Image 1 (cartoon, rainbow, N blue to C red):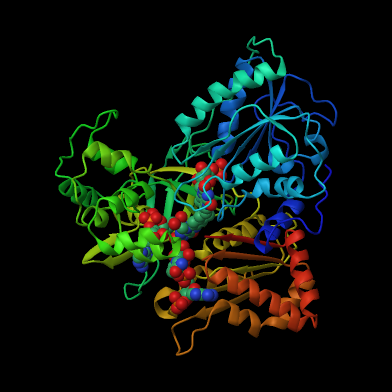
Image 2 (image 1 turned 45 degrees about the vertical axis):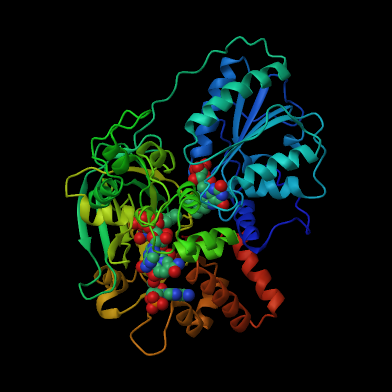
Length: 584
Ligand SMILES: Cc1cc2nc3c(=O)[nH]c(=O)nc-3n(C[C@H](O)[C@H](O)[C@H](O)COP(=O)(O)OP(=O)(O)OC[C@H]3O[C@@H](n4cnc5c(N)ncnc54)[C@H](O)[C@@H]3O)c2cc1C
Ligand SMILES: NC(=O)c1ccc[n+]([C@@H]2O[C@H](COP(=O)([O-])OP(=O)(O)OC[C@H]3O[C@@H](n4cnc5c(N)ncnc54)[C@H](OP(=O)(O)O)[C@@H]3O)[C@@H](O)[C@H]2O)c1
Ligand SMILES: Cc1cc2nc3c(=O)[nH]c(=O)nc-3n(C[C@H](O)[C@H](O)[C@H](O)COP(=O)(O)O)c2cc1C
């Protein structure tokens, strides 16, 4: 597969460059013609009735929608060809006549990983003209983020700039995208069919392969929770837990590096407080839903983090000067500071100028979302189980104990033997190298250790002989040294060649994993020179940035390189897929 030309001046920032590097290295032609099992057409082979459905997707929503669109296309006599955007060669793209782009948005208004390379290519000044192309964009996103559906908006705008003709206006869908997207597909497909001159006669569809429950978000699996064990000591400021789920007979497969999606259930105590606030009962019927209010608040909607619609409504109907002032400023940072530690109930408890009816309230809520967790086991070591390592989110605010929805659902509301809904969320970009001799350097403080426990189990199970080095840390050695026995046993067996610990609060000056990296800089650089893979997992907002800076510093100091050459060295690690991150 040819990698599109990306000029030096292509408009992407440092972070985007990171993902681009991952993509360039990851381009090993995983051709996803998901419905028809056809090959992608060669350059120039695009026929009139072919509809190329190209998706940008991180966790599978846009990918699943592409399948829905493919079915609708066949019903209109079109021949759908479904592919990930990152796998489309720019030269082939330029020959396509009919294109439906289905994409989510990630980061802060950025492309999903598997659309970044495509975006870099079409946004470059050297991108080809696309006058022959007819296109439409189905964008999915989340109005909770500032750059709502930004990836879809950018692609839509750029295709038009390049001369492509819009067959249907773009749709921007929120997290409850199923209905609006399906209605949009219903109207866009006849337009594509007319444009492509399709006879409109439905094509025969291949029989659908059965979907294994748990293989995606749309088809979760009810997995029995068999272990819920506190890892951090009672004296710890944290409640970090180890969970094990039974997968026997599920048919589910996962790889070390994948994440598990968990669909939570809201806390009954918070539901009850909300019902009281709304002066309603659990059984109160809600027009247009086939569930009562209590069930809706328990299973269907986010009731902790306030939705934007609710914030705006309350802003318009409150005498609370602080909120009115914050909203008038229209500044997301000021609003975020004001909202920190406040939930839906806090907003309803502000002084309101008029009461809010139950249907009005429910209409402003957002669907309850799954939470992702890095899997902390290898299926080679635990063929019938999947393990997680989770820090419970708990804090006090305005005299009420606040609980993270999903972390405390698992920690305190699911009893052993009960079966929460889970699904595997593959992360193909975060894997142990296929070369068992390659050295691994893993930086995972706090719950960031999760995938590295899986990696070490995997290396042990496969008998991989490469060296392994773990940087781990948390607040106090006495209370927060999770998986201590396992790590020490692996060290004694020689599986864990190096183990460097950074307990931040055991001394006056904080010590973090990146301090340990710099202390061992000469050895770390020697490992990199030996072909080591460098992995980071855990907190994205602070730790991952500081570790990135430390890696660069190690290379500069211990490689004796100039700043520019050190930066190029780290960039090359990314391009070679030897610098990989799973941060949140
Ligand atoms: C790919 C990926 C992998 C992940 N892996 C792991 C993992 O292995 N282990 C793990 O523990 N987590 C992991 N996470 C994070 C996890 O998905 C959840 O975000 C986390 O468990 C919190 O979810 P919750 O439902 O419990 O909390 P929520 O109900 O979502 O509440 C979290 C929110 O509470 C608020 N909040 C938190 N603390 C405070 C405070 N002190 N004061 C005021 N407000 C506060 C913040 O607004 C925060 O966003 C991962 C995330 C991703 C994206
Ligand atoms: N965004 C935030 O403000 C924030 C804060 C805490 C947790 N979290 C999130 O909470 C979840 C669970 O956190 P966790 O329990 O896994 O671990 P964590 O809160 O990330 O803490 C693990 C260790 O990392 C240290 N640490 C703090 N800042 C660091 C930095 N800049 N560089 C390197 N190490 C640093 C912590 O030290 P100290 O705590 O002593 O500083 C602690 O020793 C994650 O999702 C994390 O992203 C977010
Ligand atoms: C870490 C993260 C960042 C996100 N950033 C944005 C964003 O900036 N804008 C947006 O509209 N949606 C954002 N979303 C929402 C996703 O686009 C949305 O959940 C979408 O349905 C995911 O589809 P996918 O599974 O195909 O990737 C974000 C989601 C996550 C988890």
